[in-house]
Image 1 (cartoon, rainbow, N blue to C red):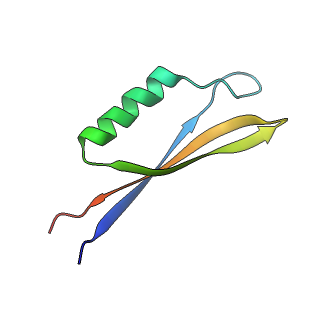
Image 2: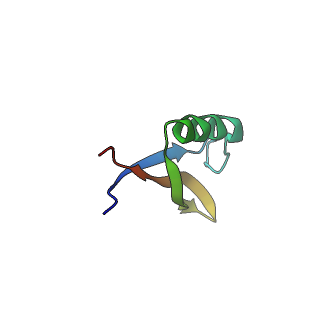
Image 3: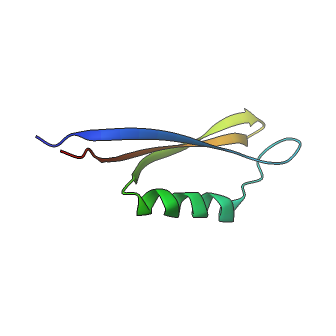
Length: 66
């Protein structure tokens, strides 16, 4: 039976009211995690107010070493 381990990473948005996403920073971090064998299985944003995102939460998984 395959076994997995999971990782949760939160990316905070910028700006006084939030909602500004630093795409290059997130992309760099996602590529580093991918190179380490992590696969993103889910992501969602957390609302702050008036539809603005406070943060982006990403869930990753990878096979556990046997």
